[in-house]
Length: 456
Image 1: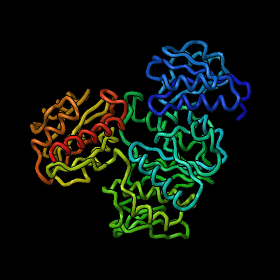
Image 2: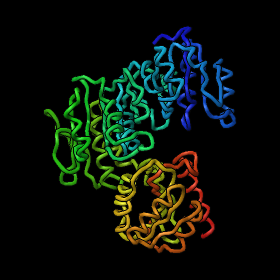
Image 3: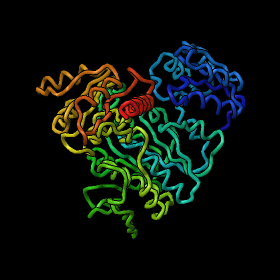
């Protein structure tokens, strides 16, 4: 992609991963005249502003002005609404508009394996990367998992790129073409951005739009919506399942296998896997199949799984106080993820902390599932009244609203017993009280550590 002396405007510096910031630096490195526009004030971006100055990137904060329109190309950060006035005017003027993922992709020389879906993306992405890395292959991890592609390709453009891909990123792709797509799951989410589930699914399906019959789509057979995507995909479809022997990867008699064409390989016995929960077995199957297609060795996959304890903020051990085990599952920002987390612990021994910022999600299914499994529910944040309303409707009385994480841990220590599990699995985003889910999880771990020291 030749940007020499081209005018490039970047909208949005990026909320926490600063994808717009890195897109601006990449464009500047490629010889473009770059202008970055951020609607938020400049106070929280002082360090980044200094870097922009050093690199010669022009910028504005507190508005998206019409100066953006003085461009040959506009790059939009994920999450920036595509219907803002300046983008409408840009379309009328015929200015090309792409997202940060698409922008970074145009500089890649290697192959891409993309992981998308609603839940399980980060674990599947990480495992896929580790399987390839531990097989000795040249591989890089990035995307929605926390490392913007524009940051990566400033220095590295060859090899295999394992990318977690979000719906916000997929809205603005044009040429993005993964050799392998792993679609892990689909359920209700982001209804604060999309008017219907159908609209949300259509955006997710864009992952496949540029694939050909020489590429691969790896689909979760156990998820009916994902399974049915196979009817409208140009690439070769393989499946993964914990319930049925499929062409692809599956669980049978406690063993995980890859089987397609004339290939049949046993990956590992499930008893040798450290990760808990059936949902994680599915993540492993999808990652194993995708990595194997890209050249990973079964021996490296097996060894990785015997050592892998999981991601931070996903069923992460946070500590034990008075015999109560504290689990950080802050990454569960949707009901289905919390349901999966609850399934990993014994019935009647769970103190569950729910609540956060709203994504206009329906919580009835989660609450109905939870009340049969938990000992007690704690509610926190913007959505606490929504949860409380449902709990009152069904007559569940073992709950309490708390103001913050510290109070939640204190309550758990008062009502909990040895052998119980305190599960921070909010089923909501974190932006009402925290910077992001990582910030929420880190603060939780710190509180548990502080209280553990006091009790000892």
